[in-house]
Image 1 (cartoon, rainbow, N blue to C red):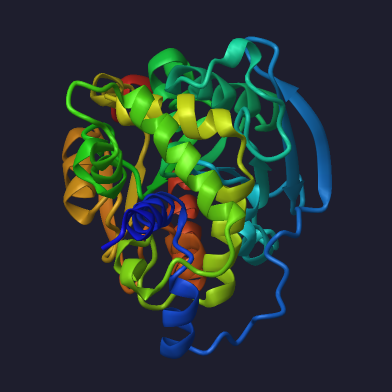
Image 2 (cartoon, one colour):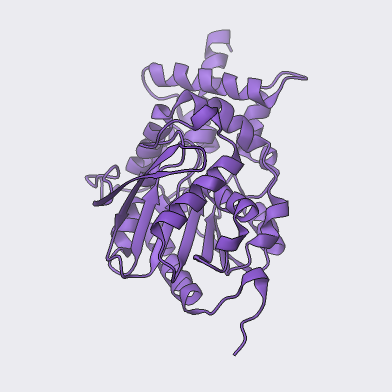
Length: 348
């Protein structure tokens, strides 16, 4: 294999494993017809709530859909993505719920992080700021995917009063509290980290390779299709949308943000998430595999596990009907349940 070909393959592997995978477009098209190919996944929820200011002055773009008097769901997106990854949730659930979506700092339409702070702690503050500004006193359910789920857990560390207060339930998809180096993202980072090199240096290499691949022409090829984040049922438009978001993400997300993510250990915060918690994972998830979800369930005070069959790391886009049904059932039950803080059973 020539050096040029090896470099291209490594670059494709890095971008595919973390951001979605260019090669999947060809492979998945053969496996499943794209029945809704004309649907605009980049469409935004209709209600523009403006910006919510986080603890350090970073302004977060917030939008919503649904009747404000309905039960509330707050959606938090994953690494290098934005609120549009919840397209099928706000379009499919806003007839029953008030769906609130926002972009984390340095992502999507939100401002770059003040002072460059892309730590999980800062993103936990982002989650808390949006909840404080948008969720009514009666409370709601917070739904986080991947990095977004970890940001919800980080909010449990810095804002424990929210859980059992405005946060009545939590749904975590493709989320882990630690040990991300064991998944696909960690494998790619390790591949690009020379001996004794730092995670920050490896993340910088991933970003440079990502930019190289995005600037090139054509797909990386079917050789790296197995390294993508998607299960066998993901339609081509979903893969293309996610890859496009990752390609447009700010470089700081891929450098500082990725290094922070690889170092995360939020196990100490789990005891503060005292509300009913749904942990959902795709059976084809290679980033945060089902084994990681099982560990998370075992460490949370009040959690249960749901496996989304046929899905990879983005079940809300790959199997939206199954995920919407799951979220609607869980949220309705969580919001109907009387809760108290610190995990105590309610008194009558």
